[in-house]
Structures are given as C-alpha cells and as structure tokens.
Amino acid sequence: MSDTVHQGQITHEAASAEGLSQRVLKDAAGQILALIKEALIRDGHVRIHNFGTFRLRWVKAHRGVNPQTGEPVLVPAHPRALFAPAKALREAVENARDQARRSQPLPEAQPVPVLGVAASRLRTPTIVKRTRADAPSEGGSDLPEPTSSQNDPDQRSDERRRPWMALAFVAVIALLALLVFWPADHEHKQVVEAPAPDTIERPSTSSGSTVQPTGDEDDLSVAFTQSDQAMRQVVAASSGAEDALTPAAGTRGQSETAEGEWLLQAIDRPVRRSDGGSGPETLAAHVEPAATLPRSGQGAQTASASPGPAPTGPFFAGRDYQVVWGDNLWNLSGEHYVRPYYWPHIYNANQDRIRNPNLIRAGSHIRLPALYGHPDDLTGGDRRSIAEGYFLLYRLFKRRSDPNAVFALSAVSHFDKAVIQEHEAEIQASHGLEVELAENYGMRIGNRIFVANENIHFPTRLFD
Amino acid sequence: VNTTELIKLLAERQDISQRQAHRIVTRFFGLISEHLAAGSHVVLRGFGSFNTRDAPPREMRVPSTGETVQLPAARRVHFRASPKLRQALEEDEQS
Image (cartoon, rainbow over all chains, first blue to last red; front, side):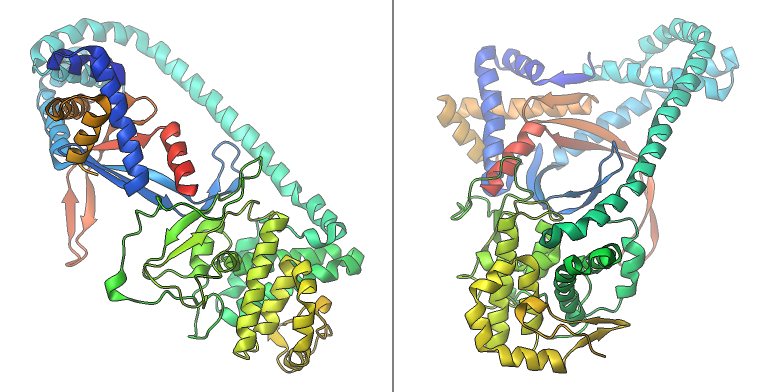
C-alpha cells in the first residue's frame, strides 16, 4: 500500500463499500469539501462528528524571514485554516500506533546478535522494518511474523550496500553544507552593503520618506524602554519635522535620515503605556462583561467601501472586524498594518462609527481598511488616509483644548502635506494657541529636542 | 456548521436522500480516519492534506501546582490547508 492516499482512492473504496457508483461518490466528495470550505468562510468553524473540527483563525501581521534568502519581510495579517481531530480520531490513531509498536520488538531483537555490527549501522534496517511492520496493519490484520522473516534477506543486501551509502551520504551532506553556507555568506555581505546608497539617495527624494528597517534597529530602540505615549507622539511628530529638514540640509542628509529611521523604528515597537492619559494610542476598548463576543464569524458581512485592488495586490486587502474585549486601534493597526502608528487609517475609515478613538466598544463592527502599499512604502492614498485620520485627531484634541494637538498636526504633515493645505483656514484660525503651545511645551527627550514642522507655521527654532 | 447540516446541504445539492448522504459522509470521513490510523498521508485535492506526526515524550509543568509531569509520546493528526483553500479563505475574508 502506498504511503500517500489520494482522494480518488478514498472515493473508490467508499463506492465499493456502499455499493454506489464511483461517479456519485466522486461528486459527493467534491461537494463535501466545497461545503466545508463555504461553511468555514461563513461561520469560521465546521464540526464533523467523530472526525474533527475545522476552524479559521486570523494570524496577525508580523515580521518574518524569507527562508530562501534570509531576508526580512513583513507578513500581512491572513486567515488560517486549523484542524483539531475529534476524540474518536485521536484515539484511533493512538491505538493504531500502540498496536504497531507492540508488534515490533519481536523482529527488531533478532538481527543484532546474528550480525554483530555496530549499533550505528543498524539504524537504517530498523527504520526499514518499522515501515514494513506498519504496512500490514493498514489492511486490518496484524501479522508480525511473516514480515520478520521477509526482513532477513533484505537486510543482508542492505549490509553490503551500507559502506557505499555512508560515503554517498557524507558526500551529499558536504555538498549541501557548501551550497547552504556559501551563498548565504555572500548574500549577507550584499545586505550589509545595500543600505548605504539607499540612505544617500533619500534626501533628494524629499517628501517620499520611506523608512527601511536596518540591522541596528534593536540596539537603538533599547534607548526607548521607558517611553510613554507623549514620547511616541513627539517622535511621530519629529519624524515629520526631520522629513522637511532634510532637503534643505543637503549634505547633512545621511546622518539625518539615519536618525529618522531609528526614531520610526522605535515608535513602531509596541511599548507599554505608563499613564492613563488620553493619547491617541491608548484606545482601550470599553469593557462590557456581557459583550465579550467571539472573534470569529464576521467574514460574512459585505464590505461597503473597498476600491479595486492595485495591480500588484494590496499589502492588506481590508476586512470587516468585530471589536473584542481588550482591542484598541493602536494594536489593531499593528496587527494588520505592522506599524501601529498607522491607526488613524482605521479611524478615518470609520468616522461615522468611531466617535472617540480612545474608546471602541467590544462587539461593535468596524472596517479595517485596505493598505495598498507596503508598510515601509505607502501609496499616496494610504498616506492621505492616515493624514486625514490624524487631522480628525487634531480636531478632537482642539475640541478638548489638549496640547497634543500640535503633534497630531505635525503627524498630518508627515503623512500628507496636502491635507494641511486644505484645512489651512481652520488651522490658521487657532494658530495663536499652537504658537503658544510650541513655545511653552517644547519637547525634550534625553539630549534630543523635538519641535513641530515648519510648514505648519510653528516656530521651528529649537529651544532648551 | 455541524455534521447534520452538512448532510442536509449535501443531500440538497446532490439530489440524494438524506439517509444516503449520511452514509456517504460517515463513510468518507471514516475512511480518511482509517487511513490516518494506518499511518498514511491523506491528500484531498484543492482542500488540504492530513498527516500524522509523532510527538516525542516531554516534560510538562502543571500550571496550578507547579509540579513536573511526564507526558507520554503521542501521535497527532495534522492538517495542512492546500494553497487553493488558503487563497479562497483569504479572498473571501477580505472582500
């Protein structure tokens, strides 16, 4: 019996067992699988009695590594089909294994004294035997004796072949090792060299500002262990400021962008917040004991606003989501767009549903909009949506006369300056406050000083 | 969705009696179970494959008492969704 059983063999066996035509069973099998698939999409789980349960689980967006090149990639959030065997199936499999094991010791004990070869040499024949011993039990009958007698001649021939096999094995290993380690080393060098030209080019591309992860991000972000929400905001703001500075700075470009890079890296890390303030990222979901609803089962809702995907396909294609206890926009953004500080993207897409981004209710439905560009290389549309989200936040802060409005605004300009220009009149109306705030609340973190962006008429001069 | 609903839907779509659909469904999954018990790798095209994996014995800690317990070796059933199924799930969830 072959080790792999295909669908055809199963339908064939089922047809003969049920006395039905093969066509009927073939169609039925296809239909069963199609039904499971549909139900999985609709309900998120399918339970087959005495067989098992299929479930759908969402995997968060995360950092991964291309197994072939070792190059780091961002894996978008995606659904995954899981299967949990039912008790009956688990037990059937376990029992079959126990039976196979019980029937094994007999044949295994024989060859050792007869041949008197080293234990390491015996490893191969025992494996060969195990598969043989398994095979008859597949047919339902347990016959360990015949297999053991069949094994002896087989094993002798194996003995003769073994030195050659060992040699060949060593050669193959050596070859593999060469193949694996040589190019890997080579590529590593390339990776190390690559960022240099990239960072030099950056200043000339001005507002494009794509941020690429570098190797030293981990060391640098250690400095940010005690960051709180204010710092993260400031950092977000300063990256905008830096962006505007670099074209003017010219030759200073490289060091500037390098700093900007680690700043963005640092805020991209999910940091525990230390205060109970009303920062944009402390958007704890409202706790409602009665409304702890299951995460699954939201796939069926139809999307209202999802424009056609880009030719290469979006990084994340958007999804309807039911808020569960403990969710907040900052984390949802991190889970789906990798960068948690893209959370205004969700806020902007759900203006009618989220009144206060600090508070999303468990059980409510929101739309997680598509992210068309790679998180490190957003498209214009993405940037605009995020900027608009930050502008909504600016308004919210304004209404509450929260000094953080400054930083919301500089985040707007970081993502899309056009949004600032559109709302220039509105911003100008309350300009006095911004100036005052910037003058009175200049931010200082360690030895670094951050201020808002000059493009939005804030004082750009740094102060101590 | 559970087996009963699956059988009902199957009977409707294939235009067969529910009794027959029931027999087909149980036979189909029963056969897969049998092959899995026999140690085979079962491949359902466009859907996924089932396989068994041997888990070595391992030590585990009881979270409530903190004592260490020896877990025996086990054979587990493992399911791997086919690329087709994965794609179908992804497309549908995101539309």
